[in-house]
Amino acid sequence: IIQPGDMIFLDIMHSFNGYHTCYYRTFICGIPNQAQLEAYEQCSKWVSASIDAIKPGVRVDEIALVWPEAKEFGYANEDEAFLLQFGHGIGLSLWERPIISRRYLGQETILKEGMVFAVECWKGASDGSGAARIEEEVVVTADGCEIITNFPSDHLISCGLPGCEFY
Image 1 (tube, one colour):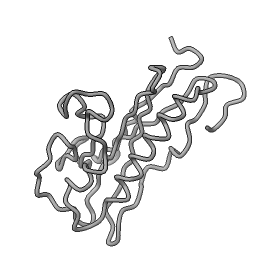
Image 2 (tube, rainbow, N blue to C red):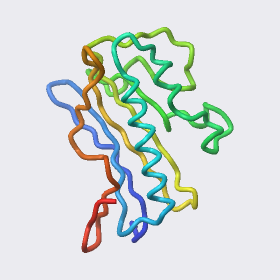
Image 3 (cartoon, rainbow, N blue to C red):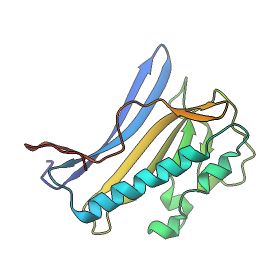
């Protein structure tokens, strides 16, 4: 049962004419505490940094390297942290190559215009009161990329109680 103070993240998936999409959004039931806000803000920064790195000619490893090493956010190794700072191709299948992850550094895949990716990050609250997860879908353009998910992620959205707010 969701209680006031709980962070909730949802993986929203769609399929249209055979093409797939998915994106994570995080919500808070009620008012977030400081640790929850900080987790959301850091998660958002990691997603933004990875999106800023996406452009034609970039190797997928260059994107993965903008994310912290597993040990920097409490995991023993990249296997344990796999899927927490992560990107993947998306289209006719929900998960397509290339995979963007510190777990798979050493790939030679170069981004090209027209490629479509999901980029997702996770950050736990420092006090253990929840976690933030944000995922955006992007298409590589001639000079960078375009975010094609339209549901806002720039603020933590409060839900479930009167007076819903953006934080």
